[in-house]
Image 1 (cartoon, protein in one colour):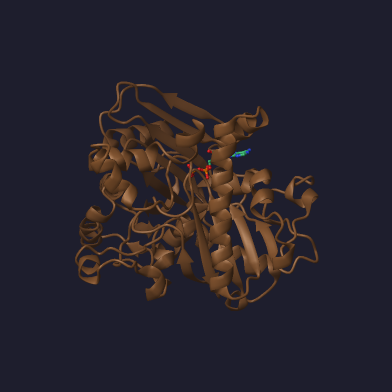
Image 2 (tube, helix red, strand yellow):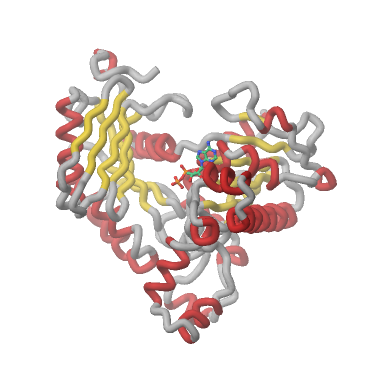
Length: 413
Ligand code: ADP
């Protein structure tokens, strides 16, 4: 169990603050990087609706919580106020043995293939990548600057969503786009959710009791955003997201792969502007754009009521998922394991069942009771039958813990 803020032992534990700064919100956790993956973080917090008329901050520990619903003018005001609330609860940054701050940074471009200690030079390098991720990196950089201003006494570490995919072979990383243009604008497949794919894929050989170098696997991060990765001997060799997180699988609100000419068509025939199309593809498509809802619990309810659009949205989602799984099996040559993770992958047994249906001929057999988790196992678990040649797993992801572990490693160097 996580220690409470009244626990004197809390002062002995080395904690890491993990920050995920978005455009209008900041999510954070204070956690012990050497804790088990299923342990609750010591503190979780969210600063929401920054810059909107009604702001909201919520801080929770294992024993107590505090909320504040005043307007929040800026990210720095929100973070400072959140730290103040933590102090009132007796667990402010100055009360804890904080050894590092880990920052989630969405785009590391071709510059960052691993986590880095942040200094002014690194911030400038991350700033150079803003054109590649105009929606994400500015907020991440803002978070880094604010946190360094408030917590200048501890090392700060940036962990990039793209870094795990820096090993993609050239033929998987590059598109069939004119090379001069691709080079000029740094257009290639970068991949995202890398921290999660890496965390989960590292757990698999341990569960199987085999050497990581000998395992070929497919990891499926199915959350609101969704991506697939093909991993050979611990190194990613393909992934479904691309220059941005829009590509690949159908997602909660994103199209996933779509004929690029749809953009030209919407511009020419529909008179739509680039920003409108961007918004349509990223925020108003996918499950939500077809079924009207993007939460799988609601999709399931609608399907059970016979709703046509929800059924169609679900069938498109599963179809696209199976296309990626199939192509990755071929690319890998032989596959040892397929793993489901994130909100949908961990909780929606029906998605796992349908994604893996009728694949006995390919050596994949799901055990229904294991898939339904009748025994209520919390951590990683196998859902394939004992005689399934390819093992299928559910491994809960924990990106914050992974970021905290990297931050600790780099802070100790
Ligand atoms: P994010 O990509 O925002 O981090 P998550 O990985 O937390 O998202 O996944 C959120 C999604 O997980 C929800 O939108 C919902 O579709 C799905 N989900 C969460 N819990 C369940 C559940 N018990 N059953 C089915 N789907 C679930």
